[in-house]
Length: 257
Image (tube, rainbow, N blue to C red; front, side, top):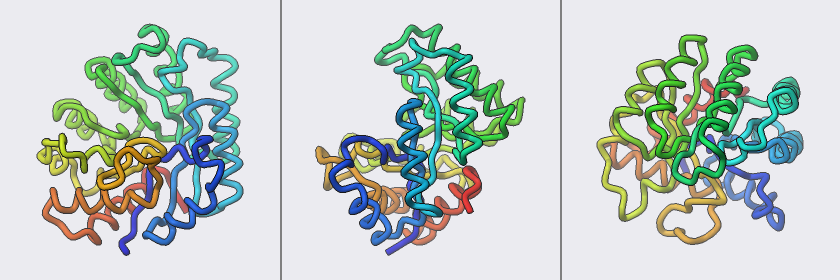
C-alpha cells in the first residue's frame, strides 16, 4: 500500500449514494491520504461541502461552474455563492474551464464564466481546477494571463498537447493524470515524464474513467493506486516515490492540513 491523494473525484455524485461510506473506506484501505471532492456546479458544491463536513481531514471540497453549465452562468449570483463556499472551507474554485468539444454552452459564455472564476480566484487567493478540451489556445492564454495575477491551478485529467502542458508548467501550474493513462490506446508516456516531480498530481475523476482492469465500471478513488503505478512505470520511479510526490503536491496546491 502506497500513499496518494485523489485530487479530483466527483464523490458527491448520485452514483455513490448507495455506498459512499464504503467507497471512502476502500480508498483509505488502498493508501488514500485525502480526497478532493469536486463541486462542478453550485448544487454539487453544496453536497460536496456537506460530505467534507462529514469526513473532516480526509474529504475536502471545491466549488465552481463547469463549462457545460456556463450558458446559465449568472455572475452576481454564482460568484457570491462560490465565495460563500470558500468562506466555508472550499479548497479551490472549479471545476471551471473551456470545452469546445461538446460545446454544451456557447463559447463566448464559457469564456465569460471561466474568466470570472479566475478573477475570483485571484481575489480570494484560491487555486483553480481547470477542465480543458479542444480549447488549447484560449485555455492556455487564460492560464498565462491569470498567472500574472498570481493565480495557480491544475489542468485536470490532462490529455492535451505538450505545448499546453509546458505553457501551464512555465507559469507554476500543476498537471493531473487520470485512469486514461492506463488505457490500451494511451501512447504518450513522454507527456507523463514531461511534468516535473513538484507539479505532478493524480486523480480518479470518479465515477468516470475507471482504470484498467476496471474500465467500464463505476470508477472510485481506491483505484487511483493503479494510475499511480502506471505513472511510476512511465517515469522510471518507484510507486512509493510517485505516491509521496503526488500526495505532497496536492497538499501544497490545495493547502490541505
